[in-house]
Image (tube, rainbow, N blue to C red; front, side, top):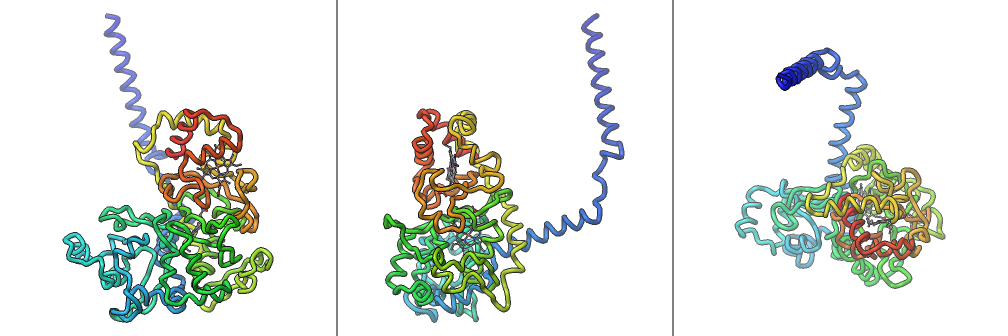
Length: 446
Ligand code: HEC
Ligand code: HEC
């Protein structure tokens, strides 16, 4: 008897809950979101417009930099080769892939893709590099053609800050914007240029020296301050170039680049578009007029660049918006040990002191996120090249997408174990071997 009564009562309660839920669903307040106000509609359409424009700029805009990569360096002639109106042997698709250039499979014409699959498209023939360029399928590089003749070439942000997922074959796949291209050998590519006089003049050295510097960088590295201070090598003789960082997961992060004090994303975008890619734009930074810290820039007048027309400034807003919208990719399930990562999280926030600087969930400081070299136990060569003389607390998301080339600005730590060992010694943390392993699994999980 008793148990039947309990069941009837339970049924009654369930009926009541279902009725209440149905009523709630029908009530006007929760039935559908209230109609957007005119301003909300405007904000949403602005956001989607900025997204599209920003993505386009990031992937395809050269900001007029063909004037440098084509007209000045004449890189297009080296790519085309003598057989196609250029100079030298030309650059085959195989060579292009070997120096880390990536191909966007969604832009490869179907017939070419089928030919590559069937082995009938000769990847040793520079003519096929031209075909890929003509299809706008080389990530971050745009060829300007007159008929079949390559006339000039420009580069985009995606050159260094995008890669592909290798879905078609290694080096050919769908675009992955914001990922650091750690395969890209910028130095080797620039070195192909038939005319390096722009660099020899700027730096006041001969072509052999420029080539030696370019050769010192290696894959995944570039020197974004060489054009300011002319410092090509560190005092210990190692190259001054830094690793290409990812350009995703940056929303909420205040200061950007490895070293501190340059500014935020939009500062750096204007800097790179104008002074590294050599796009045609306007740029203003009186700090670059300091001849002591930046002799090359001060002499060249980089602190106040004016171009007519200005092909950069109008794109900065959308470009920044797009980058801030690119999330850091989530590590794949199974790519780390989650039980260990759970333990590592606790250690990261307590005994290991990591979270004092790498504050979750940004993993950099909310605020002025930089430190003196002495606070992280490394030398001051690179920090001295920045206006603030500091290193920026690197946001730690998706570390394993850019493990190639190592960690820290110059890749001095080959893997995460080396990073954790460094902190353990420098900060006298006294971490056990097991604790270090747990922290590493946590880092891999971010
Ligand atoms: C030739 C390679 C190259 C190109 C092209 C390039 N970058 Fe970079 N980018 C770098 C390197 C190297 C750094 C690190 C510079 C440093 O710390 O001194 C960097 C840093 C950055 C950062 C800072 C990331 C962070 O973690 O704070 C952002 C954002 C960025 N680049 C965006 C862009 C955009 C947008 C463009 C196009 C306008 C662009 N880059 C073009 C190589 C490149
Ligand atoms: C005093 C502040 C501070 C503390 C404490 C700190 N870090 Fe860092 N961390 C930094 C800075 C600054 C950098 C950038 C170094 C550079 O640019 O070379 C960095 C870089 C890193 C990197 C390399 C990121 C990359 O993209 O190459 C990792 C990994 C890292 N820290 C992990 C940790 C761990 C784990 C701990 C705790 C054991 C920790 N950090 C403690 C400030 C700190």
